[in-house]
Length: 94
Image 1 (cartoon, rainbow, N blue to C red):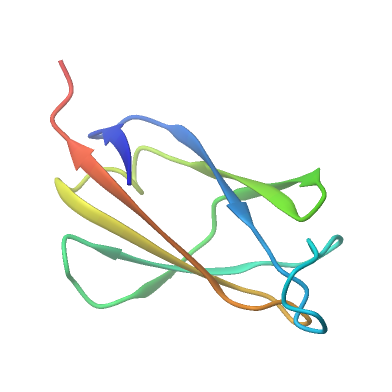
Image 2 (cartoon, rainbow, N blue to C red; image 1 turned 30 degrees about the vertical axis):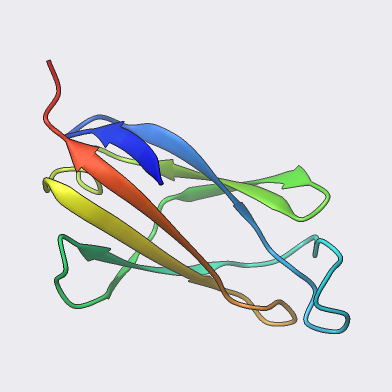
């Protein structure tokens, strides 16, 4: 689990696996991302997504995405790829 400071922009990486073989990284995807803040219901978010290569994508989370203390769960989907999930812990910044 990645630790992020509350109300601070951060880039997080996500790996998208090709749904054809469930192993290879999948390029050129349009990602759909939902987030749950501190156990709340999942809702769509639209961070800037940058493809980094070999199936890796950078999600540029904004201060609005990281404004709630606790767990930030991300569910990422795309046509032709297996879903990917990641969790971050939002902590008070200093």
